[in-house]
Length: 85
Image (tube, rainbow, N blue to C red; front, side, top):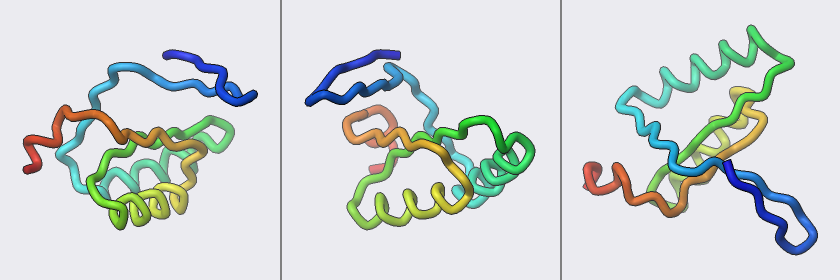
């Protein structure tokens, strides 16, 4: 992971993680909710990558609803996107 001080704030992120899934979103969401239910004191971070503004709005709402404590928003990764067209 890497860290950055920007405008008086500390930011942290992970580098070079490639976890593109071919599993349906509803399966991932169901499993994320189950993990949060079983381990409520642990942090659940959702790593997200979609293409359009509307998809971002929808997926962020869905992962917040299942109990995600943090979001990793992948705006710049070209890997996997060409396979989706």
